[in-house]
Image (cartoon, rainbow over all chains, first blue to last red):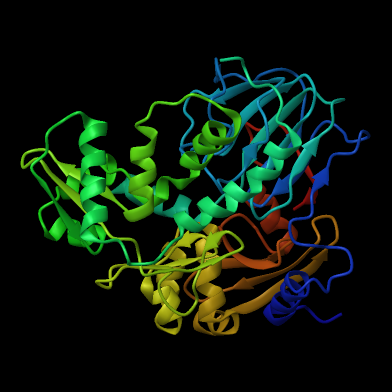
Length: 154
Length: 286
């Protein structure tokens, strides 16, 4: 079987953005099924939302009052901001003690009635109320990690 | 005043009128504010600050404010934004005018400035107010600043903001994307902007300039993506993948981790294999 090429990738993306793809639509929401398992993760672009259990990991601290709904460090909840909780109601948020642009692990969320993460371009991701613990993760960026390593060596 | 807990149907219907009116004010580009209008704005500033100020200067852009004496170090953090304050003004005005909420009369001073100015800054040492005129062009698409043929915000003196899909970008990306270099593209840390850069530069051109050899490809039905993995001559391994938003992303992956397939590359990007991390598996992507 011949390999796909960059042209196939670009064409596939165009099919989606033009609305011609039969199942994938831009901004299509995703909801975890009630039958989802511990360890299942849905990616909203470069932010992973994973069903988990076992309690808050070591090295996390509780956010006393959730004033910023954004799940990415250093970003405010402003118009058009990315990867934000739709609401803080019923959510206890824990964040890594060191939570900055180098972090690969994001907030750990304890839920009493599910939650939704919204984004202006990607679809919303919803966790139903049968799940109580969620781990947020970030996709790795090789070029950025490489630059950081080089800077550290200098 | 009694706490408002519910809006009437008439009040609810009015909300969209306020929304349209104040979006229009926020994006307004007309240049017809007169010296009398700016004098009125000057008095508004005096009322708001409860200070006697020396006078005002009308400028064509934020850059012009600096060139005429406004402190560059403070201008961005200490300015009021005139028409760009429209978001909160619209809410307050709605509840004041439609629901009878009693507000400080100084609210009208913000409304006056929103009608006639863009940025407003007080230079403390000279007690001078700097007013910036509204921009002459504002281009938006789907509620985001966007212009693929010129500045997204243009002021009278040529000072510009360049944006695509709501992201602040450089003039080069908008006007001369073919002059971008692969190094510039890889240096960009924001994935969305990087994708915009390659989109405009050309994906095929990017592959050719990287002197790439195709290693693997797959249709990933779990994530609804199509992926290809290339080995490049000077920039290591690059995974190209579609995104359910209808865009293409290119991601670097390390050369020293036995990554030979798209699946390996995606696993590295997800960070699932890090030793200290609980194991996850991807079941979807949006």
